[in-house]
Amino acid sequence: MKKIIPGLIILFICNSSTAQPVLVKSETGNPKSEIMPGAERVEVYLPYLKGKSVAVFANQTSVVNGIHLVDTLISRGINIVKIFSPEHGFRGTADAGEHVTDAKDKKTGVPIVSLYGDHRKPTAADFKGVDILIFDIQDVGVRFYTYISSLQYYLEAALENHKPLLILDRPNPNGFYVDGPVLDMKYKSFIGMQPVPIVYGMTIGEYGLMLAGENMLSAAANTINAYNITTQPTADTPFHVTVIKCKNYDHNSKYVLPVMPSPNLKTMQSIYLYPSTCFIEGTVMSEGRGTEAPFQIFGHPSLPKKLYAFTPKPNEGAKSSKCFYQLCYGWYIKGTNEEILKTLNKKIQLKYIIEAYKLFPGKDSFFLKNNFISKLAGNDIFQQQIKTGKTAAVIKKSWEPGLNAFKKIRKKYLLYKDFE
Image 1 (cartoon, rainbow, N blue to C red):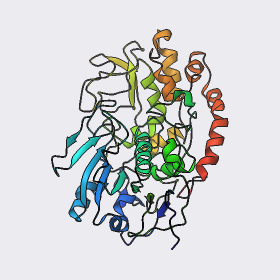
Image 2: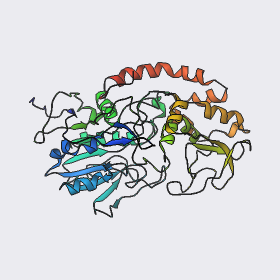
Image 3: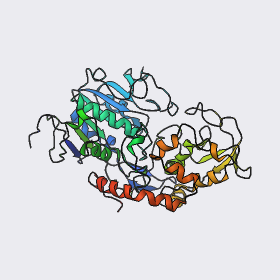
Image 4: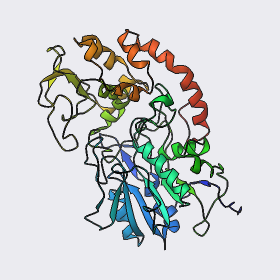
């Protein structure tokens, strides 16, 4: 056993397990692959937690064989003293962007600290009385989905406050390709904090390794930046960051999520389409919030009436949004998982926003005035490319230099067999 040098970040990739894998089923109920998320490999990481006061960053996706991680650990005798929650809250019902307040979990009585309310990064006071941290959130592998931003702040706070952190890795449902413009840091925000493409093809654990390995964290956290996966800490040996790997997953896997990751990603089809249709959020059009299929349904009252008709209305997770109670015309992209995947062809499809712009009568009012489209795209040229009629091929060509540079960085931090 190598000695751990005080003050260094130890990134240990745990890969052993005596537990049996969980069978992930396709939408027809037939076995597709045996994939076990890190959280389900309880016997691997339980020794790190025994006798400790534990804080868990979690939401409704943090399940172990259908039972919430917090309930699972408490039933195993683990002392959970605090829960941290991301955008949409601990139970996952808050609107996108909705301010979420601190609370107490009704089932367990454990206090909940919202990291999508008064502050997004844990403070030293938040960590008072905590010995060890856990991060377990199901990501969807898209840059503007805010859980990777929450991971960054949580990781920074863990290192700055010298709290060991377990990242329980989960499969990336969009982890089988890389595409999109790389973020220009001029447009850094909570929906894009790092120079990565829209679809980055990494699990949450791999992404965390990259944040640390590439010194993408705060100045204080980056001082604890030795990247070392050879040291294997035990339950009695201190560490800084440990990733508990998924079992039987690789970057060709098509993982079907067992739990809806957020209120407006209701189906696997919407998760696959999200990198392509989320651009609609930067326009005056409805992206389908308040319908049965957000990000599959999108449109506007002023589009041609021959298109698909729908009327968005408030519901849980979409209490207010664009075009509510207005009859809209647009698109409903239907199909099985396999049909949607075939349509996308492992690429971000720009045809949806290009066609919508062509058909929209008031070109000057198509994009929101707050320039949100540039935050989504991560640059200041995408909007102009659409306005000037650039083809999808030309726009994608402009992404290539950034994508090629990112892919070289990405390769260094992969924990699983890649798709290429």
